[in-house]
Each structure stands twice: as C-alpha cells, then as structure tokens.
Image (cartoon, rainbow, N blue to C red; front, side, top):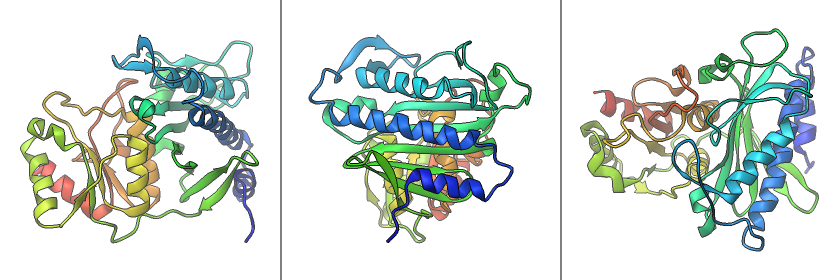
Amino acid sequence: MAVVTLHRFIIEEERRHPEATGDFTSILYDVAFAATLISRAVNKAGLIDILGATGEENVHGERVQKLDEYANKVIFDSLDHGGHLCLMASEESEQPIPIPEQFPKGDYVLLYDPLDGSSNIDANVSIGTIFSVHRRRDQQTGDGALSDLLQPGVDQVAAGYVLYGSSTMLVYTTGAGVHGFTLDNSIGAFLLSHPRIEIPDPGKRIYSVNEAYSERWSDGQKALVDRLKKEGKFSLRYIGSLVADFHRTLLYGGLFMYPADAESPKGKLRLQYEVSPLSMVCEQAGGAATDGRKPILDVVPSELHERVPCYMGNKEYVELANECISG
C-alpha cells in the first residue's frame, strides 16, 4: 500500500487546479506544522511545566490554561510571516490579530480555536484545534478588515480540526470531500489514514449532549431527547470535549448537539471558531448541521465572538432536531 503524506496529497490536489497560486497550499502546510508542535507539547504535558491555569481569563471569562496560551502563540507564529494571510482571529483574543508590519499580506484570513476542550487538559482527555479559512472580501492588497472575518460559513474555502488523543489526527476539507491524516511521530509527518470520510448512513444510534443542563432546556429540546430515548433506542455518549465528540459523530454517525438553554439563550459554542468549521466538515462528509432552524453555514455573523446553538450529524437526526426545536 502506498504511503501518502499530507504534503504529497495537497500537491496532487493542487495539480487538479492549474489556476492555483500555492498560497492556500502553504496555509495548510503551516497549520499542520503548528499542529505537530502542539501535539508534542500535549504529549509532554505531564512531564514539563505546561499543565494548569495561568491565573488569567480570556475574553469569554474562562480560565486560560498554559497549553491554551502556548497553542495560541504557536499557531500565530507559524502563519504570520508566510505572506498568505492578511488577518487572523483567535478564540482567545478579543480583537482581530493583525499580521506584523514587516511581513507581506496575502488574500486569506484564518480563524482558529487554538486548543478546544482545554478544561480537560489536566485529566488527560482528548482535546483539539479547530480552524477556518476564508478568502478576503476586498481583493486589494494590505491589511484585512473585520468584514473579512465576519463571513458566513458557506463562504469558507477550507475548514478542519486536529484531534490530540491516543493518536494525533488532522481532518480537513476544501469543499471536495473530507480527508483524515494521522501523525507518525517517528518521521514527524501526517499520513493519509482516512480518505474520503463519510458519516455512516444509517449511523449508530448515538446522541451526544450534556443532560445535566436539561432543566434549563426549552420544551422543544426536551421533546427531542425524549423522542430519541423512547422511539430510537439511542445510546448517550458525551465526552465534554467538542472535537472528540464531533470526531466520534463523524466516524460513527449519530447526533451531536449543544443547544441553547435558559442561561445561554444563544448557545455556548462560538460560531466562527468552532461551529462553522465543523459544520463545513460535517456537510462535506454527507451530514447536516443546523442551529435548530436553519443551516449553520447560512448564519451570517454580526460579531467576532458570536455564539450559536448547534445540531450536527446524520441528516435524518438533524432534521428531527429541526422539527422538534422549530415546531
């Protein structure tokens, strides 16, 4: 069996598009390089002084973990100088992150959650990085603008995530299917391990949600979970780490949901950094993703750290969620 590295795979995909400039390819290389460094730090977290909180809070009022801070810096430092981006935004930063003046500017913007699930770090639970790439709206050169970051998910040119678990996997899409690569630490390269990922149909009857918040749910959300329990003979699986829960849903099928509730009427997950990129991956794998009423990819953000409820997984189960939530 031929060994296909991420590098080779991207080059072969680029050759299918003679008009490609190589900028987009370089962004994916740089994301993979950053993921390799973060993976190494995650694997050594119990051996070096990188566990625990920094004592600070991020823009969302959440405790910043040391690995959060490290991952945020690694991603920025890996992508700030290549000349392919004009602006970045991180879930950890309140404002857009400009490209340093000494570096050239490109035609793309990158939004990222450097280390999703970081509250699970000390317990050695799987965590992840999520990323989203858009083409800038204004094709002129120079600095990007906030409007370049506030684009709907349907305009993404690439999206994906890295899962740091028993192995490190990078999963991404450019709008032509979903592909997964596993990091071989012995050679420091991502190898194609999951070509053309598709959500199984029918998938496993698994729903994933934090039922501890059920007393805060709307009547529609309660009705949805009741139907899954009574009619579908579903099992509940919930890790509490978004990338890990989504990855299981992608490979096995089912329904992942993080609904709105009385304390978080707009939901908790961030649209631009978490939900939009994972929704693109989900749809490209044959699934569906909605906020309970309309497709996530159609939601137009009005602010950088906007929150949104989400339902992702097999189309059949997502349609059921829409029926219960909007009905």
